Image (cartoon, rainbow, N blue to C red; front, side):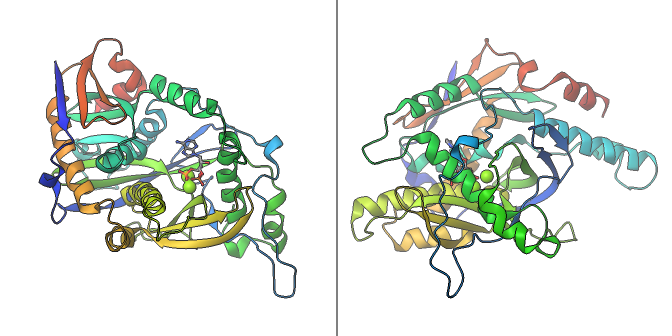
Length: 392
Ligand code: A3P
Ligand code: MG
Ligand code: MG
């Protein structure tokens, strides 16, 4: 049986937004330079420091984002990682808490060691839901399963792999760089905009040498947050690019994260077509950052051939109002209300044993959810996590 979530009559989601709980990081993890997972480690945390464009009296210098493309150390993204990094970290976090509780160091009861949330997933999955109403071209497939009254949602890797292949096989238009090259520009921009240690522990050479470093997308720092959208509580994990200054000492303080993006210079914004394109981009930026509570986005604008021209700063929270004053091609409150309704629909549908597919193809005005037999729960939830959880 297929259940559908209707994406027509969007008016029913209009109005002020439902309650949202500010995302709070409660755990984090890193992937190191070989992409090995380090639960609860901050070793791949990066620190924002703007790229160097030249100094007074020095000839203008535009960093070349293509430089070093041949030596790019690119991780193998064909491997299906399911929810593994997230689950291993959740387990490590709960085990550490359990040790404290049993040692009398924490007043939490053993029954409350398990992190409570209705939905556990990657931030990327929620970005797709948050933007679905205003992105007719977005298509996705996810798998979901229910365990201990929590819904776990992963990306359906086979679908994503096919999507990537078709994206990468598109011939670039004349004068346009290849998909691979444009992807590299994104990582190169991260490399020249960050430091691997806080500024105080950095030398001038560390800052100046960034353009000559080998670019690798293996190291990643991922933040795990507790948040809530409407009636649904969530645990989300996702990569954050860097922090401004340092992470605050107190765990309840908001973290000044920065999301980095590269983009071609927007076209003429008095032209409606260009504005629609520009606002579509802002929708993706906003949704991605909003979900983890990333307050700032630094966009590195570039020439068509990949030379960085300038940096523009966006405040995540202000983006919906900016779009409202523009062509108003999307509405942030509507996105949030729709997501709240979808999450309720999903948690009511994914109940009992089994695995469900969540599917939305291009131009569909609905999201389908149906049970599949092909995938077994064991794939979504690794055995070590289930054994750990059964002890709690
Ligand atoms: P840009 O966003 O500057 O293009 P993120 O912005 O999410 O931190 O991702 C960093 C970079 O990863 C992106 O840089 C882009 O190069 C690449 N990337 C992210 N998502 C992608 C996708 N769906 N397809 C292809 N490349 C992607
Ligand atoms: Mg990133
Ligand atoms: Mg980024």
